[in-house]
Length: 219
Image 1 (cartoon, rainbow, N blue to C red):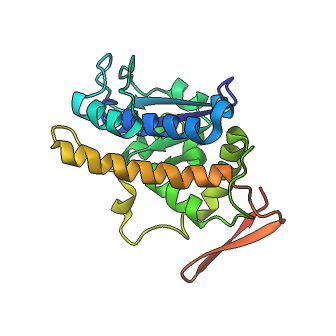
Image 2: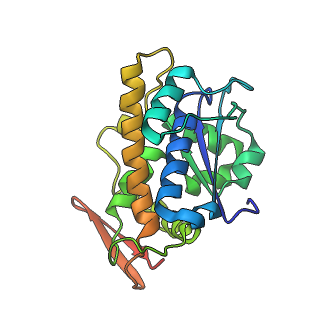
């Protein structure tokens, strides 16, 4: 694992569209929500077939500037490898295919690798004892979320597994980049709500989704 308090690795294919977009949105909202404490969380990205050395796609960069107020600077694509996966405490991917590629590189990463929509859905299902604390430690919150999340993969799974994927926007119109940014931003918000909010203190909690119910150990 990384020497940083907590490292999030975001993965897509070329590492010039979806993963730098999601990483930038996550970095932006971490800084806004947690202030100086956000430095405890490191966010990096990579691609399964990266356009190594290329910068963020210009259309993606324009959309990110609209959303965050800052165009991505100094970000270049890099190839996903076993070392990056090993160093990451959480791996957020854009599709189930990317998740399989991560696990192929390092099978032990399976429990900490999720598509971003999948983790957002799990985060929204978790029981919490109240709203996020103003003094929350984001690194501790991430660790708590990742400890509870694997048990909820099945109970929160969508009827259509494809709902967990974020479609590629390569060579697509700017409107599709913008709608993807909105979807990723909403998912980031759900995840950070869980990172900021403490879990309900109990030895066991039952989280229900429809008719399914899973016991989740206290965080």
